[in-house]
Amino acid sequence: MQPHRLDAAKSINITTIILVNMKTITVTESTHRKLVELKKEGEARTFDELLEGLIEKEMEVPKSLFGKAKGFSHARDHKDRTDRYA
Image (cartoon, rainbow, N blue to C red; front, top):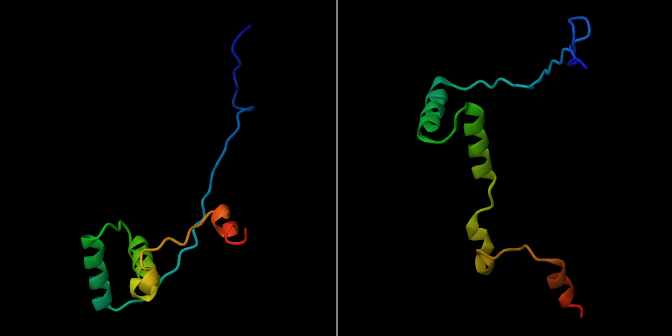
């Protein structure tokens, strides 16, 4: 038996197209220079990564709001939640 061969008429062409919905924002020259400096100083490879990091940092809940529970993990398993009713 001969190995299977595809001729040009039977070949399959698969093309993947990735569409990215990008937006443009307008900033002043001064703000642009500051963003460039922050990008150079940090780990961001793109302005998108830089802005994402700044947004995440800004939206983070301040540790000062935790009071006595500072550093306390709120993760509990099912047994922890049901033991108090036993």
